Amino acid sequence: MKRSYKINWIGSLLLALVIGACEVEEIHKPYSNGNTPPGPVFETTVENMPGKAKISYAIPNDPDLLYVKAVYERSNGEEAEIKSSYFNNSLMVEGFADTLAHEVKLYSVNRSEMESEPVTVVIQPKKAPVWDVFESLDVRASFGGIKVDALNPEREDVAIMIMEKNDLGEWEANPNSIYTSTDTIDYALRGMDTLVHEFGFTVRDRWLNYTDTIYSDIAPLYETALPKANYRGLTLPGDSPHHPSTNLPMMWDGNIIDWGNIYMTQSVISGPHTLTFDTGIEAKMSRIVIWDYPEYYNGRTYYYLGNLKEFEVWGSNDPPADGSYENWVKLGTYSATKPSGLPFGQQSDEDYRVANAGFNWEFDIDAPKVRYLRIRSVRNWGGSTYMAIAEVQVYGDPR
Image (cartoon, rainbow, N blue to C red; front, side, top):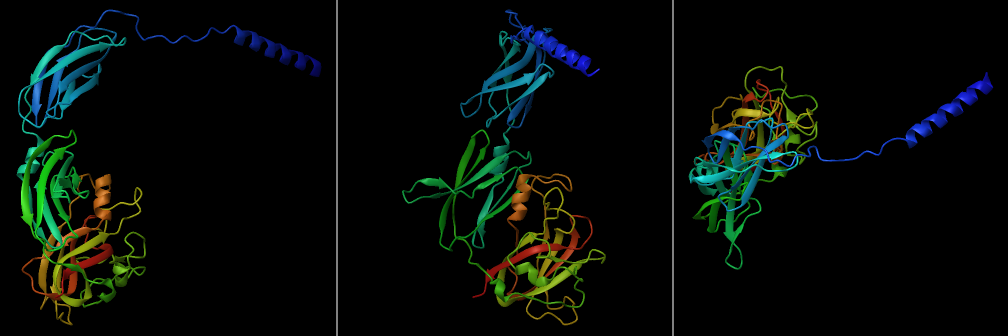
């Protein structure tokens, strides 16, 4: 038995070697050997859109057809080429910053990369999104810098270039200019002195099309960061009980992300939630920066559960011991938005960056000087009212 098994095994091995030696070498060749160009597309139609156009067409009946190609020139003079699979019957040409007529040449291309005769289509895009942003620009002085507001209804990727002159007198873009695709742009550039600054503002799209430039001389308003070393927690009647693993001083410990180093009120308590703290100094408050707590969900997620969505901030110099709002003045009512507009539980890179940098909430410029602050949560991102705050920093003018 053992001898027979050994002989059979050797025989099988020899047979496999013979078969392997007889295998035909694999030859790579084109999908098609045809040397006839495909027919052109036909029955073309155009749907003009803001800054772009959708071109629909019928494709030729050719089994070797691989894709349809559009060749055109963008508004900035750059030649562009767009390809669309033979599975589709349309393509989008983008990158226009004007409303002029533009020619687009369409080619059918087969598997041998042979092109058909071109079919010329004329498009005339509607007003480009960069102009909507530019025309809605509102630039003004803010505490410690400037404030830039604009509307971007098409949610296009845009850059609002904030420019100042360098030492040579040449205009130069600030590296902290605005890059976003949100529909409502609300941005502040800070860290400036109160001298008059000469600024230029222009809007650019991702194809490097630019709008006109507007110029403005702006003198930022004075503010300074109120030292966190002076902050003290103050629990008044009516303030919400907190999660036992958190406490008020954790809101100014410098840690903006770790569990336990935050302040979270108890989620089982219904109605608006409030917290109170003492900044340690009477000041003309300009704004508060709030870092929401990123929950452990799909990594770390903001705009979620106990993160503030609709809330108020109040100020006082003499908080009543009974916890009432006597002697308190409302500094602002706020509503948080997600830059991307994505559904609950989802966030883009921009969403994360904005939240991780802290939300700046400006106070009423006409409000009096105050020392004590109270945050009142009306609704969080989870639909209830408890709040989870990782860190706060208050700014103002204590002079």
